[in-house]
Image (cartoon, rainbow, N blue to C red; front, side, top):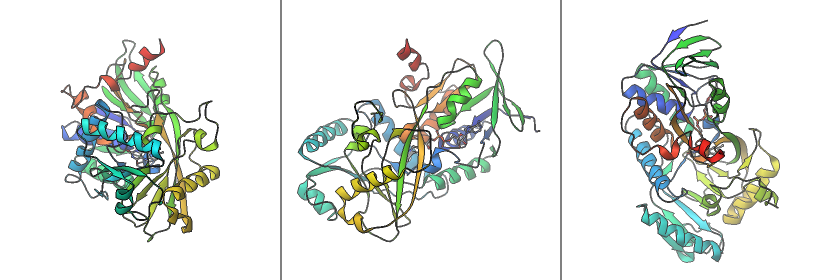
Length: 391
Ligand SMILES: Cc1cc2nc3c(=O)[nH]c(=O)nc-3n(C[C@H](O)[C@H](O)[C@H](O)COP(=O)(O)OP(=O)(O)OC[C@H]3O[C@@H](n4cnc5c(N)ncnc54)[C@H](O)[C@@H]3O)c2cc1C
């Protein structure tokens, strides 16, 4: 058993934990990351790597996403390569009703300073001839791109170690030591205790159980998502493309009583992400479930939806499938916050945006811990906003 002392303990070696550690180390803090598995053992290794500014609500959250994108671009110059591909993305409307939604979204994005182009039927097919002939329009976002989340996590890990940070993998946090006055004293693990005055809960969907160890209520629940991997060396489209339902579903918790069809109950939509490995990922689904086992019915529904937008996909083979659980909060936005326990912080609950928001959240968590002005007002991301909702 190893008893230890650290300035800051970060619990969780996924995108939030690694980003938090990276930015704290840049500020000269002494950091230990505790991860119960290997690096990116949780949802970070079960996602795709879309980094876009097209699917958030107008105002604060769109501006936060823009800052998140800038932070990732900055990291391409600071850490090892993580397959960053800056190709922008396209959103497709399926019918005239959705074309009207696209027009509205175009106005909102322009108002928030996001570069965006409305595409009519001709533009869509000129842009990508493989698109189904009846698709009537869409939006193009020239900024943003995609990355490989595993490479990203390992590049951050190397940078953390180079700066002197400690990462203890295969070590599980089993308790949080809080004084009777409500002040953090340390973190207990299955490999000894660590004395520390600051700790960050960055455990994604498992943050709720870590919070309970300190008497905190962190309302994060699992929201499953499935992905298909297509055979390599086939061309479908050159860049990330999704249907407009992606942004409509973003804030909708699938699985509600009003959802009649299988597709509605499982939040099925269309997304394709070509990768640097010359194959493509196909999504998406969104439904409350605590499982990382791919569901056959969901996979078939996603494939049908993909063929609707790119008929060429019907002749292609799926070589693999995987699923993960998004850390979901009641208002679908992240928690980047201090808590009622002095010295204990939360950086979790980033739902389907945790790769994109990882660096900006980690940076702001480091600013919060160091008593600095944060890049954004953190009020919309505070943990105690949920107390207000429940009263
Ligand atoms: C199918 C799918 C597609 C997605 N696509 C995208 C996308 O394109 N873009 C995007 O931005 N986001 C995407 N996401 C969301 C993104 O993956 C998550 O928001 C993000 O990975 C969450 O990171 P995290 O660090 O908060 O949690 P995690 O990656 O889950 O990390 C938490 C870590 O805590 C560890 N842990 C838990 N309990 C303990 C304990 N007791 N002791 C020590 N360690 C512990 C776990 O082992 C885990 O490694 C997607 C998610 C899914 C499921």
